[in-house]
Amino acid sequence: MTSPKIRLAVMAAVSALALTACDSEPTPPVTGTSTTPIPSTPTDPENQAPKVRNPLDIKKFVDDPCSSLTATQLADLKLIDPEVNRGDDAYEAEVGCNYNLNPKNTLTAYVNYFPRIKNGLTYIYTDRRPATPSPHWTPTEIDGFPAVVHAPSKDRTRCHVDVGTSDTTFFDVTYYYYDWNDWDGRDTCAAAKSIATAVLTTIKAAN
Image 1 (cartoon, one colour):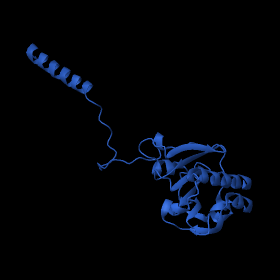
Image 2 (cartoon, rainbow, N blue to C red; image 1 turned 180 degrees about the vertical axis):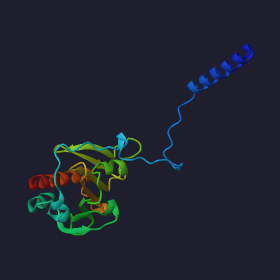
Image 3 (cartoon, rainbow, N blue to C red; image 1 turned 90 degrees about the horizontal axis):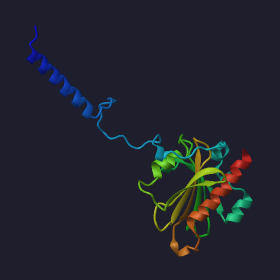
């Protein structure tokens, strides 16, 4: 027969264990043996681009990127010398079309597509969004399609406008001054957005 003292000692030990369990944080389940921190992924809410409500098929323009702008649009935007560019390592091997804005080739615009990227504009949110709020990162919409305007440097010698055409595809317009001696006072981001708007008009007309 167990003595009263032993029973009291056992009950005290059990109570202490219960209190310790209540005060402790639950142990997360073990999902692997690596202790390396998991980087941000497109599943993080802050890295998710808005959904595209009316997806567009852009395969025609991936195959022929210089068809992204019509002759009339090129004249209106003052873009010259279109040249196909394929297989650059940047942005996961984009295909695109390069344009000049003056005969000296110091002012350039690019329209690029990214067939190897499968998460659309979310790729830009994950890969390019700054860690802290920045005036050089501006989510927006162009004709109802989610877009981001972003400049990698404060002087805005280069500005990007990326537009989601579906939840798995997007295109990028880059407007770039190679030589500020040729700067004519225009806002590179506003100029890139004008080109992106024209490209989106062409894509929509083909769908």
